[in-house]
Length: 52
Length: 315
Image 1 (cartoon, helix red, strand yellow):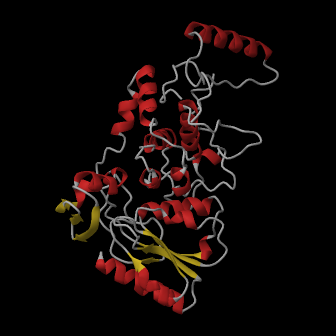
Image 2: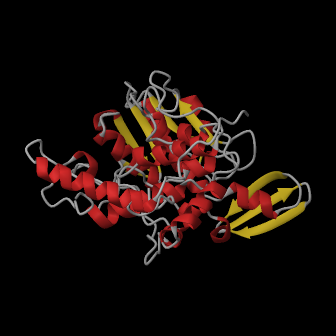
Image 3: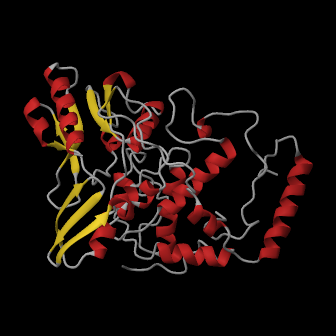
């Protein structure tokens, strides 16, 4: 995705077991903060339908 | 090339006469110059149409998907790697196949030639390493090395990786080739530039899906772009839809693509979508030390778990 021009950090992966509630909270907080810092996504957004 | 043609016909005739195979898949002259097309010979008489020249860029593995009969197939390096991939993915059985291996010296880029002669191309002949082009504007000679398809110029597997019969001695493989110069250039761009780069790359795309149809990997009964329930991708020519199509198609080929160049060759507007598939090829090489279709003995990285698979991107 980054190769195609998505900002680094916009796309994140993590693996959390159903028993790891604290990790889930941590990751969710971190991701939210990171994405908020990046601002609204401008890529892969269709502004309006284009009629050919 | 003449000898190649003779030898292919000889082997094909023998196989059909002995009833060792039901069909031989190879190439015949196309109706237009530089457009050799697939030929399916079912009788010894039909064999005489088989040819071999520098325009056999179509990947014949594409015609093997789910076939039930016994088939002999003419295969250059990339074809043979796609045949291996087909066998690994259970799209055909090895026992059904007789592979007629062709050591390949590369295919010429019909677009490069058409662009560098005056008028319309009328006829193209070749002798050794010279390509002679007759057009409405006159005659012109090319060194074959100058007009090779991009993927052929950086090919490091010219000889078939599996074959039952070889039509000639193996050719020398290219050494010290930098396969990923163009990919690295894009990797080094900042997000704005690479986004703009791909916008520009795909701006001519008309979504004819010729790239998908020419690709031996794209054999799904219903492609994700044709699916209507659910509809995964918008069907319009909106730049985002176009980009999503190319991006996802490339991902479906990750760890499978052999860079045969069939997609780029088939494209009516000359888009180099190989920049996407090659990036994934590069990643597979770097992360899993994997090149698609080289052996029948190991599973592709994306359908096999190894404890040491890289996972640094997972938090």
